Image (cartoon, rainbow, N blue to C red; front, top):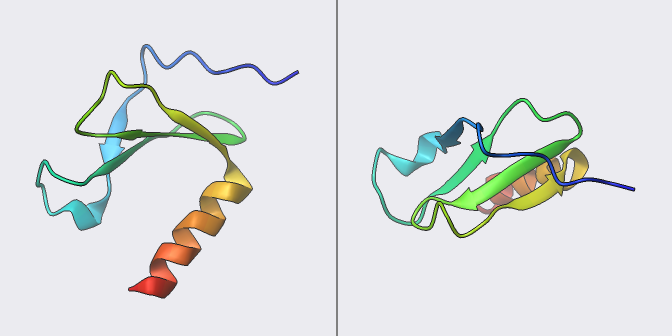
Length: 67
């Protein structure tokens, strides 16, 4: 059974593409083996998506291809 990681002490970071703005930003937390927690920076208390590392890599590759 997979358990949701405790994110209460997570250190979140924004994409380097956010240019320091507060709008439309995705934040990720590093340091969680085999998963990547992702959240909306405009709603930090709104919860997080927990993606497997393969899913996160596929997402990032798709974004890069669309640029």
